[in-house]
Length: 107
Image (cartoon, rainbow, N blue to C red):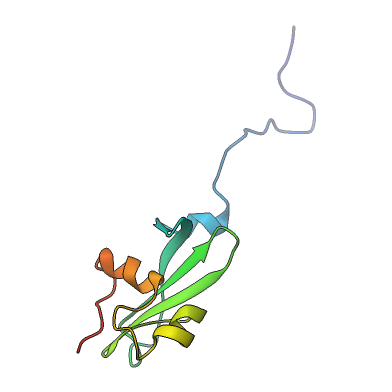
């Protein structure tokens, strides 16, 4: 008689699970050929009405927040080239605005 049990050790089932870091993200955006996982994050409601984390496959992370004057991003393009100059914002803001997740700058 053959037994599938070994003495002293329970038989383990193989369960495939997504890594914890990926399980927290629910949406993937393709922005200019790059893939970003997007998730809402807590934010100080006195400063911003909503905040999002965008994480690239190489773990580069950017944060976009919605303020009364419009959205802001902490990416270098927004900080050095678009803040206060380009009301449409950076590619991260444009992508989130396209899905209605942030509102464009109010003039």
